Image (cartoon, rainbow, N blue to C red):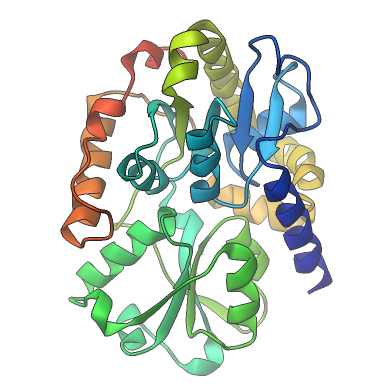
Length: 312
């Protein structure tokens, strides 16, 4: 529990400082990049290895918090899952999609206590399920409900941020928690089991979002950063042990937990093309059909082909 509270404390402090600059302030006033990252994913490895000197880093607890900073103009580029870009577009955030990761369906899951006796997701009918609203796990919930012929009215959804979800889950204030790595890996304690993950339901990709202003004014810098993203990600895939050793101190998580999470979460960079646009548009239409966003949004057009070749 102490380890978890330390992680939460670090996240909360960092979120409070989000957009105000990280530990590399150089370049923030001369056209340098301001990058928002989460506690996992390709960008955290770039930061941990020091592969992008001159970048200003800001840490965020979740994708929705990061897209709020993007909307406010506090960052130029950031990394989220598949749902935050849709909610951000619906909220009028002006951005483009400049990079994408390969599918990572095993790195988000529904966690339950073994003592409760749940065998399948359908057993959660009438129960309380916690998740972070507008994050990647929100789409996983939609697909799980669909696969089990259930609707949102069949469960009691409680929208909690990761720092709120873990204690609620630990203290049995909710029956299930849908969460992503590394919070997922941290919660894998004795007595906790994975009821379902996103395999066969959701791709759970990593998306790199760039403010429209930065995409136009800092095009070459964005391309250069994306090239670093591709190279650093490839290095991590080829050197999993070294990757875990580098990331564990950055994440403030022990190395075995970091390795376990990375084994299912870390994926190579994927090709940014029209198929990605079609995929995320399908997700957006699904959210619109359920009235989880205020009307339909055109996210397919946000895939910016200027950056398609930047990340190998």
